[in-house]
Image (cartoon, rainbow, N blue to C red; front, side, top):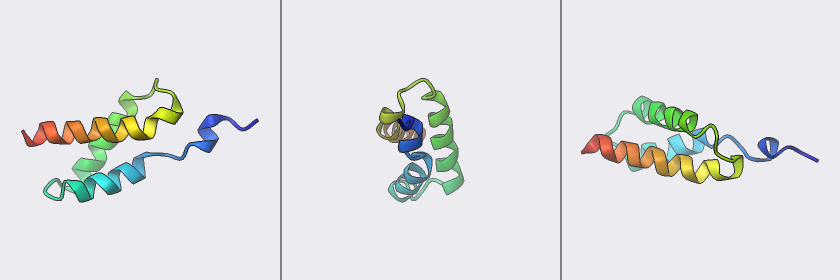
Length: 67
């Protein structure tokens, strides 16, 4: 049986790509940093839930930064 982590792709690059387009006024390096930090904060979350939760958390943090 294949471990779930091998089946679930890394969600970080896709989230960075989508959020960079959604927040054009935020520098791409900042978006990437927020996404990576959010991914780290979700380290205990089941792998299958990470992509959606990662993007939601990073989006909210970017919105909070914008004030």
